[in-house]
Image (cartoon, rainbow, N blue to C red; front, side, top):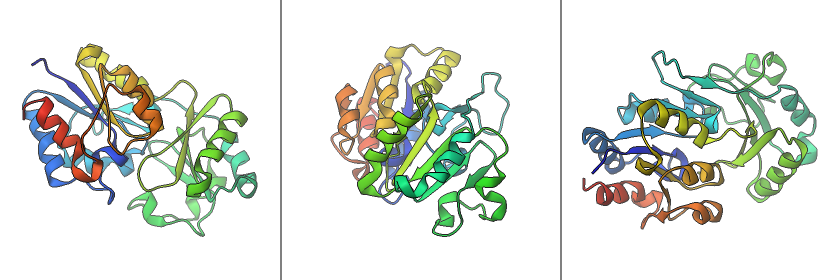
Length: 266
């Protein structure tokens, strides 16, 4: 079998409902690497919220964060590293419209910093181990961010996304997978496939040898780009419409690992 470039989404795909990589999934992805395949994380999360999984899977490949707005090699220089930005004025506009839109909070991030609209009502664990202080308030945002995160309620997630996509035509608004009712805003035309294409070109992988696993709207372009786009059984209808195949099991049943075991004869 020709070696594969395996792109994996995190929430709703590689991670279970507890936002963990199970021992079986970890073992399978490490075994795939030992067989000569390349595993790449492609996530909407910032690096600070995905670093532990990068380490857990013993990766040294490039990775995609912020739904394609940052493609980089953690801990080392990479000449093809790419980061895109959006106008910070949008963050302040969203903060002003927060109540009217039913938004709980607005967060602005780049690879090194994050800022949030308020401290009250914000779960500090959402921002990882970093202590959230007044220094992280949105008013301190001085440069254009890589992405904006918008926390909504489950029942308004889709409707708010539609409003934001109409209101800010230069920015794409997409839903996260997993337990968080989050919307992410990134530059229009930038998505996970943007970063995956950069990595594939750098490593010399043709589309036919690229596999991508995802479950949500923010995985659609990546699933379409890959020669083999595999949606999770628990995936959204948008993702299922564009995928070439679907796992037999959900993310809570090691669906990704079971699919790779069979496909790669692990």
